[in-house]
Image (tube, rainbow, N blue to C red):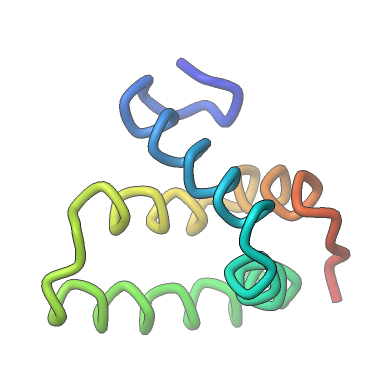
Length: 87
């Protein structure tokens, strides 16, 4: 298990996503905007994003990393890591 309570491989991919979000202001801003939403809205936005990603043939690791954000605790920790605040 990793810091975010996910399987090691999934946690590693998730950690890379968060690291990329810290390094890329555009990605960080997008993730922070989604994660700042109330839980219902965050999950709706993520599910829409995930559907689009799957239909577009996005890499499985990226889809898996985004899926982690559906978990309330992981989303809160990610938002804290990115320095955002919940609405």
